[in-house]
Length: 480
Image 1 (cartoon, rainbow, N blue to C red):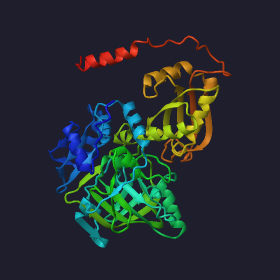
Image 2: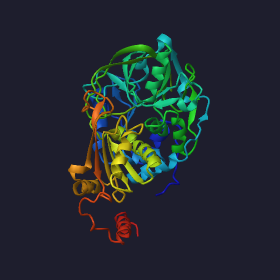
Image 3: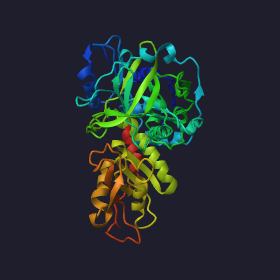
Image 4: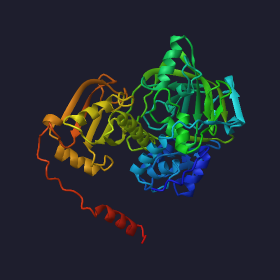
């Protein structure tokens, strides 16, 4: 795989230009409606070959609105975000993501004069509707949501610890000109920050950056340890330090190249109804009482680009954005305890399903790997079903995984049902919300002392098969 093409983008606009250069950006100049056209187009583009990003600049009812959708929403786009050729294979993208993570941490570089500082409104002059052309994503949503913004907060008990400054993507419902609803899941860092602020009877300062460079967004969507910095991961993914700037009101570190930066506080001990919202599970999550954000300052580029993300029934842009990052994090955590683990495919619904390939040391080993996956920081809230396959089975090759499931699994001994474990409350099958039985499916070949079945005479690839794969691919591409 070609890895020398590494390219870093300092803002969203540079990445959109690169997508356009590679035929991965569709600019829609005809007039469209905000609802339902924008969300319907972002929903539909996942069914178009190559699934390019979309750019709209003629939206009925808005003046000078510029809207980008599906920016990370395909494997070519994800590859370009990492500075790789757009035809890079999925598994190679995941492996390259993991390889760059080995360079973590790469400290950010602080820059002055960020482009988002061109225009500022404070206090009662703040009006989100004047700056962002917000629209509903699904027809059952309770309102407008910012769902691709990088939300920045600090641990109030250790504010000087850069690693404990969290940059995450959380849904934000627009409830008024300067009010937002925030959904912090209990296992997310910002929920810990808010809990600690409220224990001290304080508000939690936050900054919300809209329209960011692709590495910042990838890092913000990655499940990381509590004291690991997303900015330092973004630097590792970029191959050079990520540029940041100081938000003037809160003093938080925000991406230098953002289009819009909102600053304010999560108001302590205040909850209001938030939702329903069409979630990544393909179901509406319902309405719940959630924390409230008061926006006290908004800074923005002249004619900012509003970047949003459609999510609903998978696959959507969200799955491309979080899938590889989830794979890598689970792989690293499992590999630390079980060096035998070969690869992890957790692309499906944010890792609610994970497929793990591993070597096996002894009978029952694969089930232990599956249980460990469910007790990783990410797996505690997400891994509801884990399929474990042999090292020779590529977990990204679903036909081979299905073969392993159909020939290796004996339901009498290879299914492990674990009752009453924690899961993300958005999982629609959990009952009560946040509690679920979890399932391990052992699709590996039994090894002693487990002597079940008759697996002695497996069919293997001919030695020349790998060479012929390369030769036939070259012929198909017209190469000698």
